[in-house]
Image: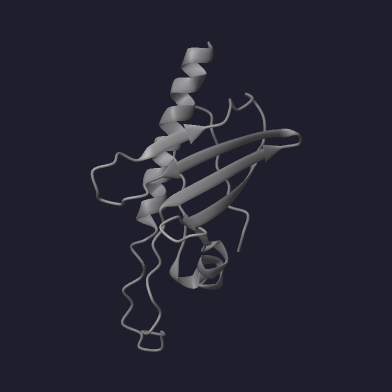
Length: 132
């Protein structure tokens, strides 16, 4: 049973992080009222923390060299409890900077240009977006 849960969590993690990179394809609107001088931010690390009371599970994706030779690293801090509701928080880091630059707030401020989509093939899993 534990192996099955770990496989499901690993699949979920992979799907979540693939979805994270989907959000980088920002809108290509024809509106010309956007600030074209804003710089693009490098995201090397995504921490997705799921909380259910005192039960905390962190999903981490790290790709410190981007398209370089080092393979991305996926980490899961524990197992999710079945039939439970978790609240998720995402943290976006650029770890090529020292100290690491937290760009989460900047992405929030540009919320009209960025959106995260979460999908899963785990049976019975429901994902609800609660932010605006």
